[in-house]
Length: 99
Image 1 (cartoon, rainbow, N blue to C red):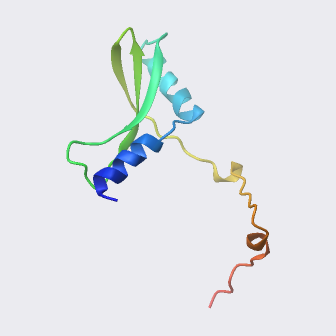
Image 2: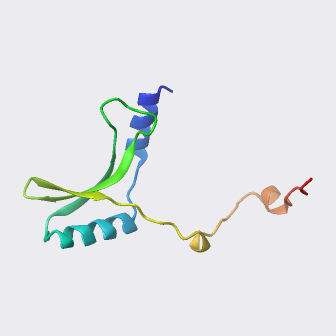
Image 3: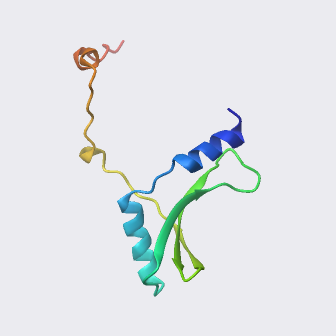
């Protein structure tokens, strides 16, 4: 898959979390924005660089007017993530002994 195709796929696959949207609404309120909707999306730059896609960036949209709110970076608390496996074989594996 070409770099541009991979970036396009990442753009299509991105789904903002509730945390992204909450942070975006906080930014909107600081700018005096209310009503309308929040759009959180990844964007590609004009040259499709090695860092593409960029973001996620948030926008407040009200009556066709888009206001840039900035980047919305959500930190993940790894303690809250539960890892589940449906594969019994994986559950039986033990970490390899270090050399």
